[in-house]
Amino acid sequence: MTTTIVPPTATPTPMSTIQAGAPRTSALRRYVQETTLLIGRGLRTIPRVPERLSDVTIQPVMFTLLFLYVFGSAIKVPGMRYQDYLLPGLLGQSVAFGVIGAGVATASDFSSGVVDRFKSLPITRLSVITAQVVGQVIEQIIGVLIVSGLGLALGWRPDLTVATGFELVGLVVLGLFAFTWFGVLMGMIVRSADAMQGLGFAVMFPLSFLAGTFVPIEGMAAVPRAVAHWDPISAFVAAVRQVSQGTRSTGSWQLEHPVPAMVLWCVLIICVCMPLALKKFNPKHTRAGAVERTFTQA
Image (cartoon, rainbow, N blue to C red):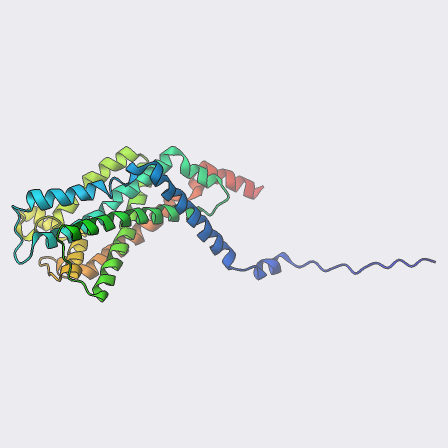
């Protein structure tokens, strides 16, 4: 009689055990990799479409040269040279104008169908919007470096130590991050690059001029002075000017305490704009999201 030996059947491992044993960092690693790839995709378009950087290259150079050499001879700031007054203001204006660049880029991606294509791919949804924000911050840093380098070449002499230098860099990066989130949100709402360009200039242009960027706020008329005292860009310009030159501003609370006021403004903008932008980008409101849920339920 032949005896058949049946090998023992391996007990299947429960799926919950496999999932629990899987490395928790895999999702984070995937998110970082996809975000990095999308950032590279955005930066690679700059050599092909160099006019994208016009708002962070040509525009600040024009403002610097015009106000320094055309209007600078007629503007007198008590106690300091006009170069040392103007360049911190231009840094604040460059950061604030990042709203326009971020909004136009976001509106272009939405209107051209690029974002819908990304949503249809098996990638992390959050990586798409994160890459948009980080890529725009990198582009705005280029503009800040151009303004700083041009200002130093034209006679700007900041009074910085190592500590205040790091403080200035931190303020600029925080401001870029906050205003970029605001611009991305506006680009999602407007959905048209031309409309975003017009709306951005209509809002940011007067606010940047009222912020004490080019002339002292104390010399303005009553109504614009009242607006300037609580203009968010005023806090940033005054903070940059205080850190880089050691000058103090007077007027409202945010002008007398510009650094904490600027940080509070940035935190407020981020806390409001980030969740609204993420909600606006939520794929459940799109046709791609509906298809994705259909396949998931099936």
